[in-house]
Length: 443
Image (cartoon, rainbow, N blue to C red):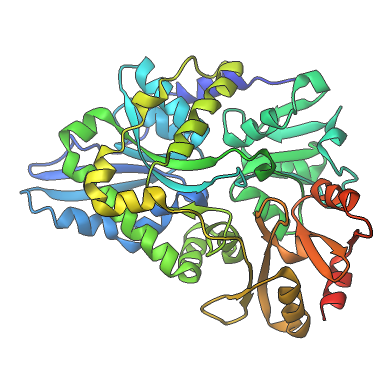
């Protein structure tokens, strides 16, 4: 495997810190600036970033403190978690959001540099791992992970997407050449043919599939290991401004409620702010989307974080990480009160098929994928997007991009061809059918 990942990642984190963002200790007289680092296009973090910013809830919570200070929020948008970590350990960002693997690097760097940080809440998560997907070019002949032997696979080393590759058995011992690239670079490499496959996190796989620039090869939910994004805060900031951190977490909870109660409006808002298609945002953040949102730090997510450490250690990106000391949900517990325990026990909604009609402010839900197909067949010109859950993993995917299997009268969707074929092999008479045939059978 050819990879300069450890050196590249370390260099990125140690780049000169040129950002001019303020911190909670900065200010003019009674003015306190709170600097929040977020990733607008990593739409799994919208309740602590893009959506929260657009709603103005954090500013309202700060104005309600009435503690003699005037507060200003400095929102800083980044493409990845690495520069947020660099700015946090330099004291220039107070609160940041990022994925599970970057969170561990955040913990490790904070401890290493004597600027400890803590995971204080969760944004979006998928308990099976469906936030990460491996995709190939639309005309690729690759149909399974075994086909990647001898191929070039692009990913971002140190991310959960790379962790999916490692856990799926895609390693140098199997003749894989791993390309360490940022998501946008990897997407371009896939289109240009210089990469045979791309493993990335939300929202890249869904975006490329929606644009017709890729098709799914592997659904990360097949690993059945949780993936998530979360909020991290500097320890010194939390101790000095606990009320400010609690105000942020209250506002995050409000943004989460808004997203859950107004999923279409939230998707449109995030789309407007990021330039992503609203249909792609909804795939992940919708009512039955790949992501589930609530701020509680669930035990299964903490357990998954502990399992992630070995992957980063093997890549020489971190040493041991004390996950238990990194996790600190006491501020969220205080901010959310009795609702925290309720969210801790909450389960993701059951998977379901949805259609987003053109011009509608709400989606329609169907009991079965076949019912959805029947509706789509009768309203071909009136569909903005149609979504179906994988019959094996429950991962939502675009109906016209799914792999369909006809089993008698049943029509079953799958994200990836290998899982569809596995079903066919186990069920006599079942067969893979084109989307058009599935529509015809349903109608």
